[in-house]
Structure formats: structure tokens, C-alpha cells
Length: 465
Image (cartoon, rainbow, N blue to C red; front, side, top):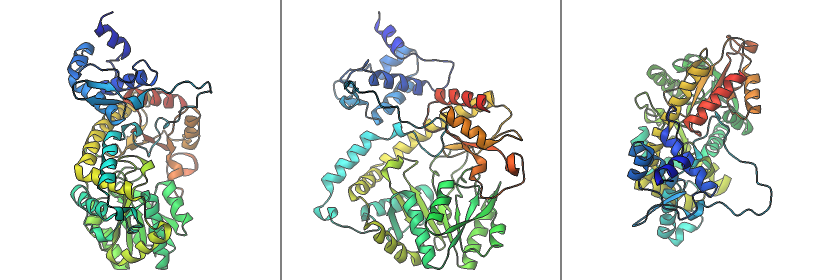
């Protein structure tokens, strides 16, 4: 058998489907995982494999980069690209294999965890360790490592048009701790309620409630949060997702932004901006953060949970200057500060440009996957209306009138899929189609799976519907 035939058999490609690079990476990943490509195996050059498989060199380069980022391939000077030793399958111990643990197809809210830049993070971590002073390993500033706060302030100003001073920036254990700090700061001011978009993220809604601040629903329309409805309440705090409303995907319109800032200044209120996935946009111009317009009344919350991985538990909170002292006190009481070495590693990744490079690569991949799931929905669920596709890592599929989206989501879970019912993300009943007067729909994620997997998942979902 010729070498060309060997590689064609090892990595079969379906050229009728999109995402050849994803197919190639998946085939190589499987071959490494089951031992057909053992540790130390030298792979062909990108040009050579592209010629053997009759694909463009860019397809092979993208696949190799993905597997290198996962730690499965390494480049060695003089030896080309080889299978990493850490990617070798474990020896069978005779015990029953553990069930596979992974992200259910179509589950929203998670990135592709396999794309985590392991090699870049390892280098950043090693640099952080080698450069850290002995004093860095002591109990530090509860607001976070000064170097990371400085790098974050620059990054947020450059990428999100934020106006952030490192002195008023706190490094948190993900966005969840940032919300807990905000809740505590609100309670100290005598506020026990917060306006929240309707529909909204159910976990965030529950998080505020668990910390003693009751969510009050404020409707969302095609222009984002209804500021006029907010103004009719006696609230003095509101949580918004202006760059990519969660879950509908709409952008807070410029007039609404201005009205929201005016409302906050008029009532002496606080706008909490959840900037959860704003780095990912595909078909629209950049949308700067609201905090950049009014740092005196807006608290900015962000994290690396969508950009890198939730397990890192790295987030940030930029607060108006008067809240900095109370927020830092709450942070100190919670944990005396976060893990410093990880913070220094992220600072190095930011300073070296590694985070920017990873996000650029992720945007390319996620756009392909967004396109694939939209095409699959048009093919298998042609009656469904799809929205919120211009940015982020999820979209909304509105189902035909009379559909019980809760039942559909439950059946989808039984079929191994992970969409969320739109009606359960609403705080109050609204006029419209669907059971109980709620517009039926599903929130679908597409970041964690290849185009082929998404096509198959949507086909299964269509059968459920």
C-alpha cells in the first residue's frame, strides 16, 4: 500500500461536508487516542500531507495547529511534527473504562475545551514561575496581582474600549465571584433588588438571589433592555448584557445606551455590565463596552470562561471609584486573594500576545461552526426562525407556535443533546405563542463541536421536534 493510500485510509474526509480542517483534526485525534499513531510518530509535512489528501495546505496547517494547541502534537527542530508523549493512550488496567465526559452537542455557554492553548499556557505558566519573586508567593493584594491588573486594564481599553484604571480593577474567581461582590456591595448600600433582563441567564439570576439580591424582570426587545420600563420602577441597580444580550443576541441600541446612563446618573444607580462573550463577533462591527461611556456608573464584569476555559476560574470586576473600597473589602473577606501564579501566567499570556492569537484562531473556528449549524437548521428545521447569529457562541431557534419547548429540551437531553428551553429563561409570562403564553424556542450552542457533529446533532434535534 502506498504512503498516500495509508494516510487516506487513516484520515478519511467527506468532501461534501464543510470543515475539512475539523475533519482532519478529528481523525488524527482519534488515531492518536486509540494508539494507531503512537507517541513519537513523525507526521508528514503540511505540504506533503496536503498533497497526499488533495486538500489545501491551509487545511493541514489549521489541523496541526489545533492538535498542537491541545498538546497532542509537538514541533521538533530537525524532526518535523511528531505525536506528543503526553497524548499516548493509557495502558489498559483491566478495569472497565470510565464513561466519556464531554460537552453535550448544542449545549450553550461553553467554548471548545479542546482548543485550550495548552502549549502557550504551559509556556506562560513556566515564565510566571521563573520570573516570580519570593514576595509574590506571600499573601498578596486581595484585589489581584498588580501585573495582571495592569495588563488587563490595557487589554480592556484596547479591545473593549473600556476606561479602566488598574487601581479600581479586581481579579476574581470567575464572573461568579464578581457578581457576588456586586451583590454584597449593593446590600451595603441598602439595595436588595436588581433589575435583570427578561429573558436572561438563569444561573446568574439564581446567583444574585442566593446572595440576597432579588432579581426584578425588565423586558427586552429588538433594541435591547427597555430603559423606559426600568425607569418606571424604583430600582437603583440593573444587570445588562449590552454587547450580546443573553440569550437573544440583540445589541443594546445607541439611544438605549444613552438613556440607561442617564437613568443611572439621575437615580444614583449602578449598571452592572456582563461582558461575557463580546470577543466573538462575525457579521457586525465591533461594539464597545458600556463602561467606556460611563465609568462613573457602570461596573464591568468579564472572565476567560468563554475565551479560554471555565476551569481557570479567572475573571475581573472594574467598579466606579466610590465602590472600589467596599468591593475590595468584600473580596478580601471572601478569600484574601486568588491564586497568584495563575494570575501571573495570564498576565504573561496577555503581554506576549498569546491571548490575542488564541482568540483570532477561535473566532475563525467558531464562525465556521456557526455557519454549519445555521445551514443545518435551514435544512432540517426549515420552519424555525433563527436569531442572534452575528456574535457570541450561541443562537436562538424559535419553534413553531404551540410547541412545548420545555418538553422538546427534555427529549433532546434524553437523546444526548444539550439545548436550553427559551421559556425557562424568562422571569414572567409574556404574550405570544407556546404553552402558557411564552414564545417557544431553544438556545443552542455551537462552539464545542465540529461542523459534522453539529450537522448530525441538528438532524437528531429535528427528529425530536
